[in-house]
Image 1 (spheres, one colour):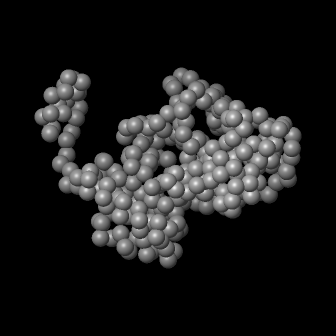
Image 2 (tube, rainbow, N blue to C red):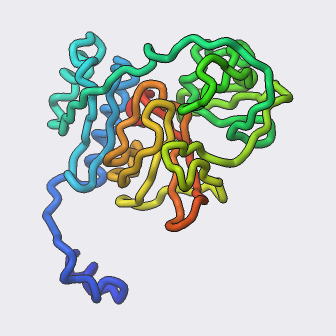
Image 3 (tube, rainbow, N blue to C red):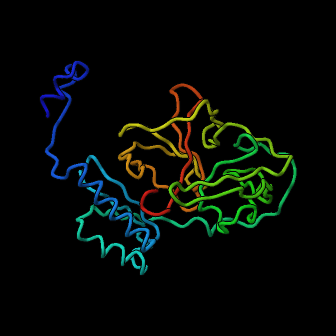
Length: 267
């Protein structure tokens, strides 16, 4: 197999840069185990954990917040997955949601990210699960107005499976949707203009997220199964933000949306 790879014309010039390691777990075996673990995650619904197949480690990885390790659902889930000899990584995940201050509501004109009178977000951001039964407001990170929320509209629909996805119908006519990503920590590029959407098709791709509490931070895709990125540990409250790649020396980017803490496939 190594010989077949190094004989490719596209690879020959880079063979001195490559290092090959024997993999003990086949892709088919890992995919089968991952599906079984996914079923356990659906059964127990553990909190604060994500999971994916790591091609680098040749194993299934579970990343979990230390704060949830002693919860019954998490304990049961981890106990039942011991037989798979997973790689477990613990993180200290601060809960930022409790620090969101209460603000008054304002109907004045405001620009937000969206298109065709709808905004895409994470489905679990809709706690009611009933279309048009939950009001949504704009509260941008680094907002200069610390006292006001801006009404957007209500959820048109939301799902947890097979994709954690929701649509908010923009009902406030004073809201103007614009295709951009907030990046206020940068004085040079405070607003990133979205040029197109993109699909991540390879490990090692460089991606960034823009979240309410994390703001903008970047990392590299470690796995396409379950979608996970090194260096991008989102915080509670980041859900629904954009995942994007950017062009060098440019303020334009391509994006996807960011989901968090929703069963194993969304890890």
